[in-house]
Amino acid sequence: MTVAEQNSNPPALITRTQGTGKDLVFLHGWGMNSGVFSEFAPLLTEHFRVTTIDLPGFGENHQRAPTSYTIAGLADAIQPMLPSNSTVVGWSLGGMVAQQLALTAPEQVRALVTVASTARFVAGQGWPGIAPELLNQFEQDLVNDYKKTLERFLAIQAMGSISARQDIKTIKSSMAAYPEPSQPALAAALSLLSTEDLRKDITRIKQPTLRIFGRLDSLVPVSAIDHLCALHPACDAVVLSKASHAPFISHPQQTAQVIRQFLA
Image (cartoon, rainbow, N blue to C red; front, top):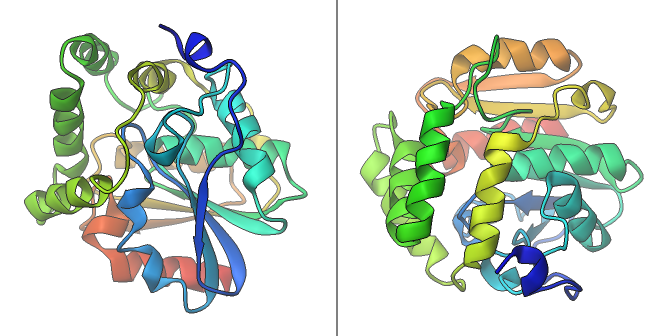
């Protein structure tokens, strides 16, 4: 069953909001849900109103998937839920959706923050990224055992972090409070890591942009940062020297401070 067959006319997405102040909207990465931000969000709610939105097909929105499961389709589904004049913070795959929202909803997105994200995840000629063979293997494994595939993906995300075991434990525990993802959405979203390419589009992003990276990240390697910033020279880039793919999990205070300083 495809995502389109599962839900051709999905209802409005469920969101969660806490705190007061200027609006921050958080979007998670592949295979995850908004639970991953449950320990991080409180570090920002004193000064910001934080809204978390599960990507369509995931978490509380596991039964709400758009007909077109593309980055543009996901952005279209999320746009009606965005507060006006908000900063969108996207982690990993969520960062691609956040960049698309900055392009298509400039009247709603005042600023953009990407965390361990890029304009193209798969490696290609002159572009560092995830090996195509690894993504192909994930797609094959997902058919047979999606839980084991997710665990393996978590391990790769935490790889390099000195707190890798604790990072994985924290993410799994936080995610457990939310419904399991739709398996068609899992497969469709995974394919986006191989197929979506925003490199020609991000040159048109006009909003103030902060890009946070982990120097030890194996999914968005540090060698990709210069390539990305060359396409979007107006962005600010911060590299956390001891972080991997989930800096808001391994280095929450430092990540929150970087975001606060940027928005100040």
